[in-house]
Length: 272
Image (tube, rainbow, N blue to C red; front, side, top):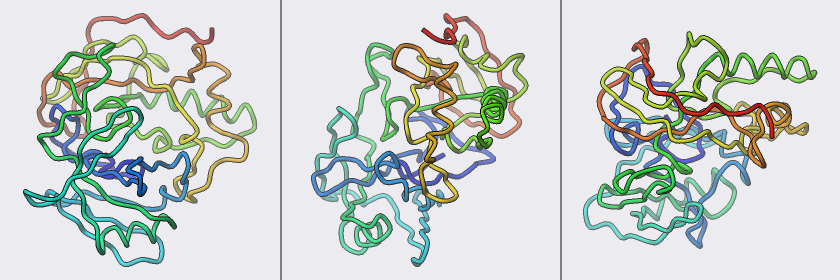
């Protein structure tokens, strides 16, 4: 999960999932003075700042800085309007030493904001119902992918003379293994794991963020793995990897839970 949007995430052994996805996932976000969100697309160095969930809050580390721990703001905290893609929502602010810490980490003015429970950011109604919502994730509350899909991509990368990459490049919430073929998840509709039920909504279109090496905070000069992925996973202008999903029923999940899928969607063609 990724408590603060576009910062380094953490692998969990178990978690609780609600209508916003994994508890605490992307409830925080960093914005510029004008309220527009920051991501690794423009600031690759964000990959070097790591956020780990604590008991209700988040613990953050960055190279050369003392660690920082923040909790959700108390009731009555000042709010401001912030933008994430085309959506404008209210978020609670921190200011002071917290904003100063993140401004140093990013090398520019930055403000930490938090999405409180009463704020509703709707998922695109083309793919979701009126009650489906997301926190500060790009568009959907959950991203699911198989290890077999990553292995297939890495085989293509090596064949093209590039280096294999880790799953962290794609920032999924749920990673499954043991499917019968790479990209089997393209055809999934309903997915159950642990006490959670998901509805797969659409493939995830990938961007330059996948080219940022999380170990260095630098983007690939060759544009990998996006460049190779585009050779066989393109649909129109989009390059696809992993599946966006909605939460139908929340509950608890843990590493090792059996994953079942039912229903079928049209699979994604290799290329248009």
